[in-house]
Image (cartoon, rainbow, N blue to C red; front, side, top):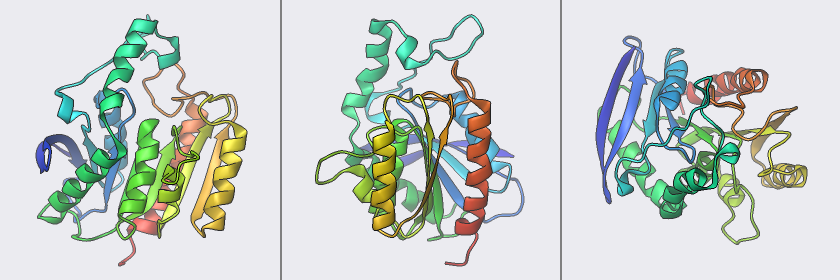
Amino acid sequence: MREHVFEIPTPSGVIDTFVTHPVEGGPFPAVIIYMDVWGVREELFDVARRVATVGYYCMVPDFYYRQGRVRHEFRNAKNQMITLDALEQDKREKVLAPLKHLSDGMVIEDTRAILNFIDAGQPVRPGGPLGSIGYCMGGRHVFRVAGAFPGRFKASVSLHGTDLVSNAADSPHLSAAKTRGEVYCGFASKDRHTPVAMIEGLDKAMRAAGVNYHYEIHPGADHGYALPDRDIFDKQGANRDWEIIFPMFRRQLHSPD
């Protein structure tokens, strides 16, 4: 495997982006990982490595770059990352603070710059279909870019995504409804961010829009279940997600269109 950290120019500066891909066999389909509220870290790089080992050019951009180098990890006695709800109030506020300065529009702007970068000479087929995987707030960002670039993002994955549906005229789920690809959501049964009514409403809206959409609710899992370094990691739920994600990537990202 090859690994790089590229400095990708954007209208707002330079976004550091971890990239990993196989040594041989390119050009590869590209997959972008949209970070959760904690920001980029080795845990997300390991997720990228897992994706890349089966034949993808996988990227982890640092969308907090406008605020400098933001890194947060709080660990328990077992060296597991402590989930946000279990942190003391001051630490929780510290983790959430950068989120207030990152808009969905910024992520769309940065994604456009990333697409320009990979189309300009990376071992990725120029103009080819892309996949995305978003965790927590990244799950919402996946919805946004699927709608902003419907001709590019053909396999979109939101895992324990937050704020996916609202009453606003520009609700994130309306962005995802514009996609011409496939969308998968993984939910946790105990996640306070995604009550059953919201999950069912999202399913109804996506199907009404004609989106190729499917989802899973993982019994007993909680918010953050899909991240392997977390104290509430749910191995069964996360493995079920991968069982769905990789076939979807094969269906959507290896076609000639």
